[in-house]
Length: 208
Image (cartoon, rainbow, N blue to C red; front, side):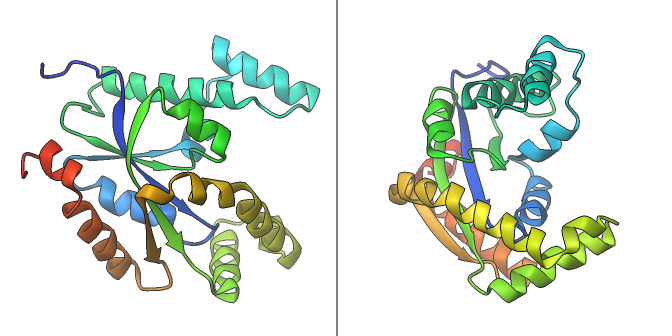
């Protein structure tokens, strides 16, 4: 039925190191009909800490504790459901493009209750110097001087590598490696080529 909320949302996942262009690709592809870009980072930054779930996050933060994966995934679901209720995201015709979630294998397992992952796109940028240059340029452009330091950048890259190695293995059966060292339009082309030949996408889009 049109407009009916499914038990699970169909999704493509973007994973890549800081500076690889996940946000850029999400914005480009999210402007195309039938795709809805959801950035977990943006959702966290816009969190209303006055809500019950926002207060849960505040409580963990005040204690200096890590936020449980269960709470992160629950917040994700409330945010996506809210967008569906507002008809910003139309799950009967739109596929989610997820950026920033899952961040761990545990989150991926919890997400299986809420999303059907069609494919994971690993935006690979093995040239670490290129990554560092991109991150530094972005930090300076946005006026985040602390984030432009070599030490901070190297730490962010190491954290990413530690967090996501298991995810790449977890989704090995539906993983596509994309060369993120290319200019953005070529990266977009490579992603769309993979999507268009995905059998489940063809069925969902009425092309199969």
